[in-house]
Image (cartoon, rainbow, N blue to C red):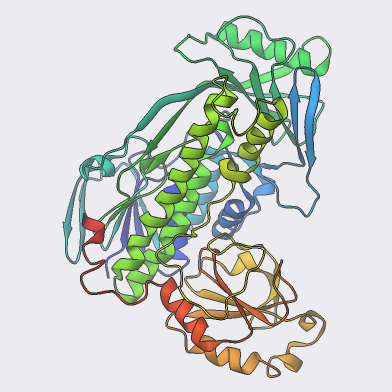
Length: 533
């Protein structure tokens, strides 16, 4: 069968390629550039723990060696600390890392992966779809025709794939603008991020009263100053003056020594593609959505797109297309991003002075600070990973379903599990292999040799039920899971989202849930043309 064609060799495209290779699917990545990315220290990303873990699985590299995992978060208003959060050493925390470093790690992993071919200097100029596949033509030194089973457009804001498929990209332009500087200096905080609103040294000029500082490796920091609405020019002289003023204000002294590494102006747009699927063509990352105000991170969401799409394309590649499963990519991911955009657009008027939230948050600085903190730390409506609660893949009418601390459709908590070979691993380490995960909660198994309990109690019956599922599945055992009683069974998707939690071993319910998760039976007249509407 033909490989999957991926247009765009940025972090999202490379992540999708490696995620497919992990599931034994070959890919061709069309890179319009020369095969490397220019270092830009001021262009960074904040990754939530689960997306950071995704990159670590695919690259085999701990991101802590290349970025900074925050030890805490501090919010200030004028001269007062409004809130302070400290992360324990074993507590999940955001990771701040330069985007070119992410790309470099992914490119290195792709170079060692025989199932991934990267075609440099290959600019897409046409796409043709047929019932059996896709043909893409590229121009440039390596211009040629490429034949693929599916095609994924991960080619950024000005996506050629999106334009060729005539997919509209409505939304709002310049929702926020930030002046950005990456510099190496010594600040009073170590590996702790800071949001400072209305700093007392605020002066005149094209700057609003908000600055964010995020740590980077080797004593470097990224500083973002919110700019007021409009198109006021930020000159190098104005930016240097603001850098010196800000550093002096934070250190209560003359401006400390600093080494300026990179600068820029970051403009945040909010846009959402009308369709994320057109037959055998899909959109992901900035090609499908733009967001980023109030701390939300577009790259983080793009990586979630790749994780969601990979296991569905892999299933179609290995087992034949199932339109309901492929359609669910748009249904799930577009709904989550749309909800985040709505929440951000509703919050912006109150947080930026319009008063639009006073009926919800009575105009208090602390209430506004809580919303901003949620966005930056990946919590609440503005920042938390989306849950696929209304997914078309969600099972219905399970008699034995029980609630746990993870809502149905949300990312599972990372716990230690015992694999089928008796080894102790993290639950997240088993994700992304294209298999469903069946997790039995069995207190005490961690202190007994596996040979004593693998054939005792409910294990034989559960193992038989897992073998009979309509999709490959792996049986895992955990001592505990938040909110799950002993002997309950959790079904987890390949991308780490909870399908259901059942009380005890219920083969019929488990089978029904697994069947729904992989698209169920196609109803007559439904699904076959859904992706082409």
